Image 1 (spheres, rainbow, N blue to C red):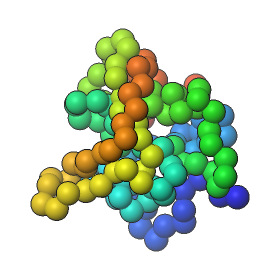
Image 2: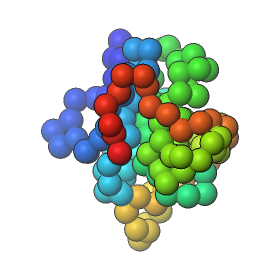
Image 3: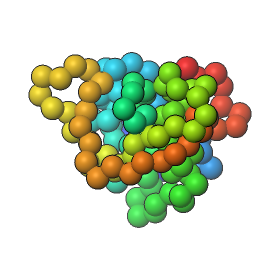
Length: 135
C-alpha cells in the first residue's frame, strides 16, 4: 500500500510535509507545479491551490484504497494557502479537487492549469507543526 509519492527519476523541487502520516508536497516554482500536478499526482490524490490568486500547487498523496480524514484534507489545503501571498491574511479560500480533474491546456504558461469538480476549503494558512521554514 503506497503511502506517498511515486519513485521518480527527476522529481520536482518541493517542500514536503507530514500531516498525521500523510505525505503532502508543495511545488517551489511554476515548472515544479506543472510536474507535480500533471506528471506526479495520481488520479485519486488531492490537489490544492489558492482560489483566484498565485500559490504553490499542493498534492496530498492518497494511500491505495484509503482516503484521508477530512481534517487531513483541510490541513493540506492550509499548506496551499501558506505557500501564497495570502500567508498572513486570516481565512482564505483554497480550491481542491482530485488530481484526475486537473489538466494543462496547450500553450499556457508554466504553472497554469484547469480544474473541474472544485471543492472550496476555507482555511487559515498553515504548515504542520514542527515543519521547517518553507517558503
